[in-house]
Image (cartoon, rainbow, N blue to C red; front, side, top):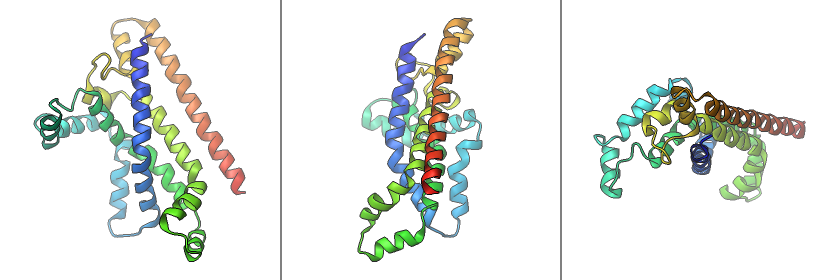
Length: 222
């Protein structure tokens, strides 16, 4: 089994979780409590990675970040290297295709917080940041934790988008899912089976953790 590919997947998943946490939390709170024209289209855009085929999303990301794109040209002029077919490229792609997995559970958690509680805190003189730390986060933490677990598990097993944007460069963009594909293509079923079993265990553990967190939150609220 190729542990380099597995550790690269863990690295990608870890950075995705860390970077996506503040971004998705801001978007989720905004969608949970703000009402404005066109909000439904914003939510639809957030959910697009859930319904688009990974290769389609990967294609658009490849085009938008390639050397011929404004983003790609600016990145290469600053860092002296192309953005696609690099770890940084698949990390940006990972942030985008994981956005709904992070935003939606957090949004539901923030929507479940009573507005009366937040209004009472504001009437007591608590500012926005204090309300966030003392009210919002303690009450919404099950949804936040569920989102982070799902993002980590989804990133570990992602194939299509990562392959389109990053290719299969050993030590750079060849993740565990791509390694499984390569092993199957090489008729190395033993290595493919071992890596698949490991990803299966991680996915089951992630689902179990998300269910436990949700159950404890429901019991606590009742």
